[in-house]
Length: 334
Image 1 (tube, helix red, strand yellow):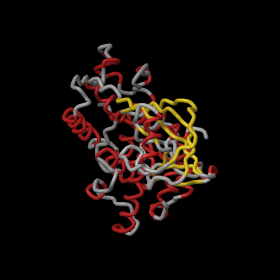
Image 2 (cartoon, rainbow, N blue to C red):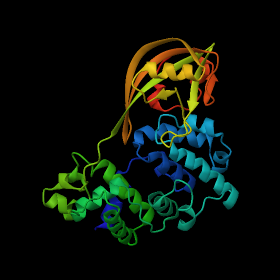
Image 3 (cartoon, helix red, strand yellow):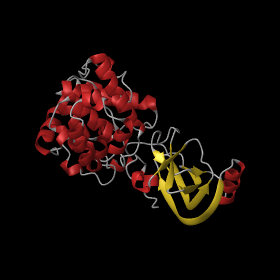
């Protein structure tokens, strides 16, 4: 690989992103966590607000969990931010608030895997650690003509070793960002701009007119679909939410919902538990698509009397907007 040409291309053509104009490890960490499964354009306003509100890891470690979850509402994949808060507390407690500069320390922190640790070590500390994400997998698969299934960990490990060999002969902080930028802006999944690519002269896929073939990715399983009856429950002059304990969207708030066939099943169950339903009416239906599953939500307005469930939280209508809530339920209007 012509690494010097790649790095020169990056220096001349990269986007002037706020988190790419610094080597501060805290900034790099925050940006890499936010960018997981999320487009740059969506991340930028969140990143800027985050740095203003939590300018150092010490401020982040002091953040209230509910407030912080509200800060990142809309970005999805909320477990990453729960881990971010845990990691911040560990950095303050065990590293005196100084961001770790050793790979083995980084990889132990909640939510930091090989890619994120590699990105921090290479971009912040200019040390040769591979950072293999989807963009880099696509670039290298095309450049080398790798026909192995890149959904398999064993094949990604091989590619990671190759990427490691390249970064050891590069300027790490430039190389990592150059590969990311090349995959994002030029070597795109569809309609790549091969004529602009600094590596096209030796790219297997380009030279053999097989760009669309790479990377080789086996078919994903179909998304699992869930059918829920979702309730806007009013109790006296307040409304009811519950805090999710399930792994998906853990810690976020939602309207109570049940995987049952009809509203009658819920009404009967409530009655058995001493909760009298005085009114219910269908409102509308929503469909929300996650990475691995789909929620079909049939919304009912319900008024209950007498008592409420232990995990129900009573809120004034105005307070609901202040609670961290996933987009799947935020789109539901009272």
